[in-house]
Length: 120
Length: 120
DNA sequence: TCAATATTTCAAGAATTGTTGTATCATCCG
DNA sequence: CGGATGATACAACAATTCTTGAAATATTGA
Image 1 (cartoon, rainbow over the protein chains, first blue to last red):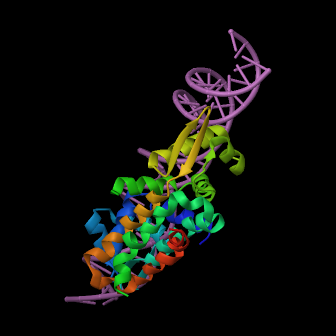
Image 2 (cartoon, rainbow over the protein chains, first blue to last red):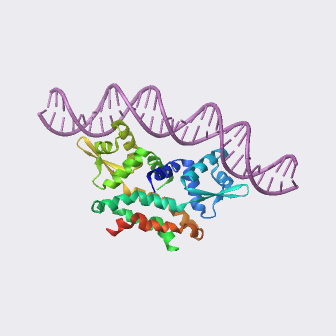
Image 3 (tube, rainbow over the protein chains, first blue to last red):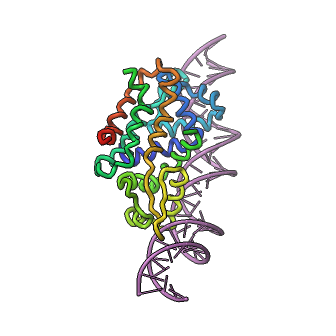
């Protein structure tokens, strides 16, 4: 993860429409949704949805797979994981002695990933 | 964490300047930095920096403490942790059986929080 | 008190991003 | 083949955000 990548992820999710799309795809899981289903669920016009899906795909937050004349989109969860690693890595790595006040970050282990880990 | 809060976090970090500021503060740790130090480190003019710091503070990503005529800023790490929990919670919580393809998310445990947890 | 310093507020213009309609491309099905 | 459908590309306009300079506020130290 480098800075431009992190920036493009944040830019992608800084729009209400795109955040809705991403969350819908996260919620849907590995089966994903085709563009039309997303548009119907969120009531976004096709042209506009295509614009936002393109941005999400370009940032790598979603993947696209063609199915006949449909385009199926899926959330790319590992990228979000990488993003967090990128943001938190410098803190404790460089100056561990300064991190006393931010150790609550350990909570992410269970809050964010607990259920996923339990399945492995 | 609700949607408007998540959105405001992403909006805050979708600017290169603000991402730089936030990362600098994360790196600096609990002691934080006063506005002038941030501006000097990143070469951002005071007026512009103030604009971006206000946005970060409004989103809750940084806290401010007045010290005489200085304003000391610190990164709010726990909020980032909450954000991840918000984004990943729906996936595995609602339909655990669909999460087979995204279990790599468990990696965040060690990648992002390993060093912080080791200190507790 | 007075000048200097640290930071913020405000207003204006510049730059970027979001939205919409029309046109286009590719695929499916009769 | 040819019409219908799903989705995207392009262009124009609207809306938002960013940047900058001048002015204001508050604090410090001589």
